[in-house]
Image (tube, rainbow, N blue to C red; front, side):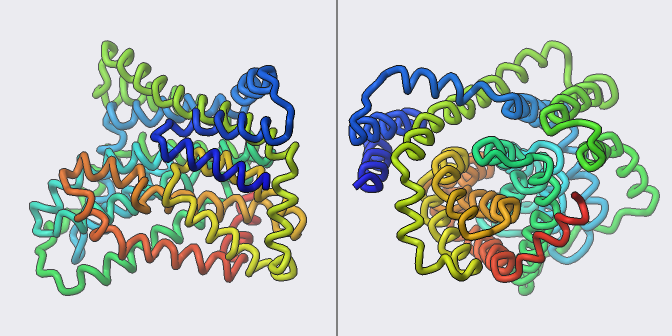
Length: 425
């Protein structure tokens, strides 16, 4: 009955068009009524405690860093570096988009920010070169979701707080899976453009490549600073977010000089608006999470999944299927906040490594950003790339399928995730 109340109240509120954060509060009220413990103080205290977290301070700083990079020219230079390295091969602009997505993901940690920047920069170039607009936008949307996988990752921060896991370990464990997703896109792009008759841009001279690399040096240094600092314990993920924001601000203002002092206020306001949405979601979700624990909802879910408990691979597959279904109707942050307190007790009881589960969970949620009808990244790319949602859904499916196959490989062969994670950690 509790599961029915939980799902009915949450989905019912969403069906009425209620914002996710308020739907979570309605869900909390429904659970309180079901448990006969109506008390406004429960909501107030958990709302406050939900946002009162030191690790979550990383979120506004990474949001700010992403805004600075897009406005201050760091993102543009990453695309230029990718263009210089692989732009001349057959279908080169697609490989540029994938390589740039991997590099950008190591800067901002936001799928929406990365997809928006790549769409604005690359879609006109790909269309002018002769590539299909919908297919080009589909590739960029699929590449944008690498953002929350390769560190720094806002998704890993929220999951780490919700699951009480080391965010540094999650960050470092996400590097290779993010690259695996990138390789799956390379294979899918090679397949879809094999029959296209598109002339790639001419190969750049060695001097031009070196000049582009030198121009992008300061942008390329940022992911190295973050990974090096986390690997050797120089700073925590929260401190890494501050380093990321300050470094990108310094480079954008004083080295590249594309971010003017008068623009900083607008950048701060944009980052603050996005942060407010995420933090309110986190706070509202903790109300439901607390009541989920009190109602022993995870215990009831364990009972439903009992047939799979003896086989870790089958259990992981079952849980990932649940996340895929939920991801079609819900954005990444609320999915993490709602499912983490439900699934983590199952993971612990089954003896699955929580870091391994966390990586696959975030990969799965990231893919959910391009699954219709809600897909946030799809909506952003459709708007920036000037393509209809129907056409974009047709263009994205080969790449989404490739990413799901990569996820399946990581479920079937856990060492793909855990062995590289042990190297970095």
